Amino acid sequence: MTVLLVGCGRMGSAMARGWQGSRRVLVHDPMIDALPAGTEAVPSLAEVESDGDLVVVLAVKPQIFGSVAAQLVPLAEAGALFVSIMAGKTLAGLGKALGGTGRVVRAMPNTPAAIGKGISGAVGADGLRKGDREAVEQLLAPTGDLVWLASETEIDAVTALSGSGPAYFFRFAEALAAAGVEAGLPRPLAMRLARATLVGAGALAEAGEAALPDLRQQVTSPGGTTAAGLAELDKEEAIDRLLRAVIDAAAARSRELAG
Image 1 (cartoon, rainbow, N blue to C red):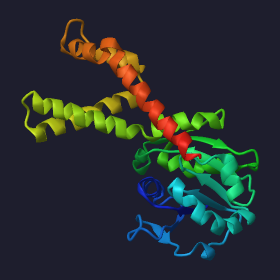
Image 2 (cartoon, one colour; image 1 turned 135 degrees about the vertical axis):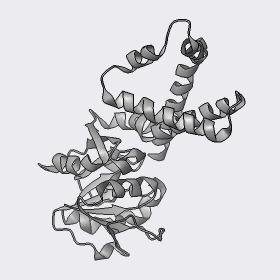
Image 3 (cartoon, rainbow, N blue to C red; image 1 turned 120 degrees about the vertical axis):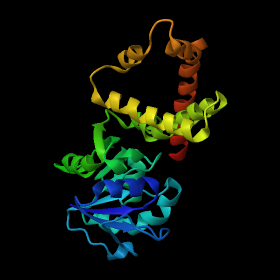
């Protein structure tokens, strides 16, 4: 399998790092100066040939896709499989822009893909061929887990939850550290504690030995310090209301990008 990565920003480069050493990766992105290690620059899309084993990963900003779509039509006509990680661009819209091809998959990964710890939600168009799903699974395997969605309507919520999700956890850790500073800790120490706590909690969750509510309860002694802190998070369902608003806003933006 040869991968053509169209767009190599934060998400595209994260995926390219995840693929390092596992496949040939061509990159077309005139806006970047340095390529991820192990990839090959493609100055012009006209130089790329599809032998039926080419997977084109669309990682440009949704607003830019229209300016490159026509250049990709010859690859679609030659039988390339397309995987879009662009927020908001529908399967129908992608297929139309690419000359009517049905070999299109929408996927939403996240940045932990760079270290093989990502998760992607994916949905395929009706025109996928036998073996296309397996090809996508092989493509995304080095970047982490993959879940196939029941319908395209779910992908806006996936974008809001796991696609954007790492930023929410980082922002929470920032706020946690800032609160530690307010409580009297030196800033470097507060940041170190917050970062290590985030990483450690994630490792416990990844171990999968207990459900998330059980993990929370294991830390929470009745009447203890953790219970006092959680009481503030849960007062008037504060954290639940906040995160519903966060997911709703991100999902709404994903829908807006679909035009």
